[in-house]
Structure formats: C-alpha cells, structure tokens
Image (tube, rainbow, N blue to C red; front, side):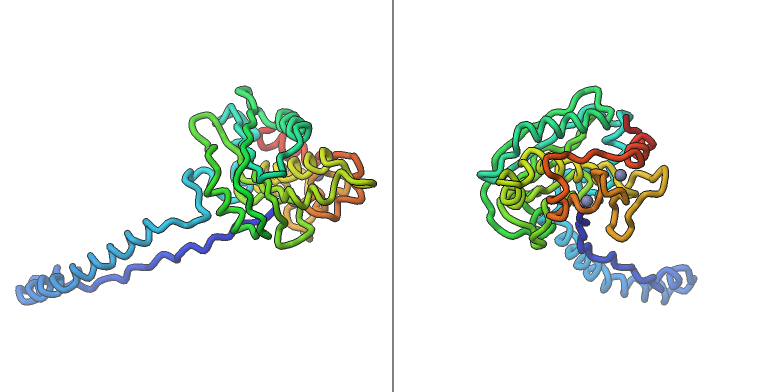
Length: 283
Ligand SMILES: [Zn+2]
Ligand SMILES: [Zn+2]
C-alpha cells in the first residue's frame, strides 16, 4: 500500500475589487474613472487568463487520461464489490520482459476476485509485455509508467484495474508490491523472482498470488481504507492493515517480512476482513 501524493498548485484567490462599489455611486466622474481603470485592467486580466489556460494545458506525467482511474486508493471499493454501477471487471496486466506472471497465480487471483466481488458480467484478464525499464522505482515513477502504457479504463458498466509488473526493485528493497491509486497495483517482478522458486524458498505461484491478492485487498478498501470496519481490527501502527498475523491483509505481506511464514501457503482473508467487504456490497 502506498499513497500517491500529488503536488497540485494551490488555487489562487481572487481579491475583491473595489470597482463594484464605485460603479454604484451615482457620480459621473466616478463612472468615467471606473471605465478608465477597467481599460487598464482588462489587458491584465486577459494576460492572467492566458497564463491559467497555459497551466491547464501542461499535463502532469502521472495523471491518467481517465479521471475515474485518477482517484485515491480505496475510492473504488464499493464499485468493485457491488454490481450497482459496474457489472464487469477488466484487469489489464502489463509486465516488463522476463517477468510475466505465472498463469496459475493469475487464475488464483481471478478466483479470489470472483469469490468477493459481484461481477455477473465476468472478470476478464488481458496481458501485454511493455518495454524494459530496469530502474529502481518510486511510487511517482511507477505512476508515470502506468500513464504511458495503460489502455484499459473504466467506461459504461465496465470497471478496469491495472497491474504493472516491473523488472526492478522499489526504492525500499524489501517491498514486493503496492497499491497506489483506486484501480492501480504494482508488483516488483524482479524482487518477487529473486525471492521465490529457489531451494527452501516460497514458490513463485504462492508469492505472486499472495502479493496480487493483498494489494487488491487494499483496492477493495481494506483495512479502513474506503470500506468501513464492522468490528475494529486495524493495525494502526502499520497503516491500513489487519491486526491478525494469519490474515492476508497483515502488514508483512507487502514485504520480505512475509517470506519466512509463507512457505507454500497462500494466506486468506480472516472473518473481520470478509465482514467489512460484505458490509460494503461484497459477496
Ligand atoms: Zn499492504
Ligand atoms: Zn483481516
């Protein structure tokens, strides 16, 4: 789980003009004075408007072309859990060369989604390889890669989720993945590959499935991140995570901390997390 913090320019407040008061005075000279000062002020106003319009046109490299997908993490929880607005879920997975997710991990992931979300129109997965990057990534860099490559967006009764699998590490070397916008997940493919599938290591299928399902849990608003808690169970010391060490939404699942305990087990949601999802439109 990671928050994408945007630096948006603060809106400038327009100072109240005193001209209005002058205009209402029934004094001819004041009106003339008003007209004269307006002559001076109009070009200035036009210039300010021009500057503002320029600013609007310059695009933020992190922002997505679809405003629905450009919201904070947790905002789409109800839209994904219930079928009130969206009946179909499309998942677009884009991976860098060498880091295609395991097909069994993908089928585990879709079965997990089908067990939680009311999507009678189906859950569809598409995958594409994108250009290698090799960089150590911050959440801002991940957001830019998404903006440059993502093509699946929410429209009509179809809601879309994006999963990026990178060929590098996060700046925090133990982070295996994070969710960072309302419909966006990143998996650090190289980090997952480097720490699974070897002798005495967790299997790649188990690790990929666990990270995908944990991050999607954040997208579903867990814990206390857009989906209200039925029973208090948030581990506030670790952000929006569950206080049950056996639960999929335990904080350690995002990082290497989970590796010793995972073995070949794929953690599941505990009863408190399931109750929250059901309370917010889930199955
Ligand atoms: Zn997490
Ligand atoms: Zn839980």
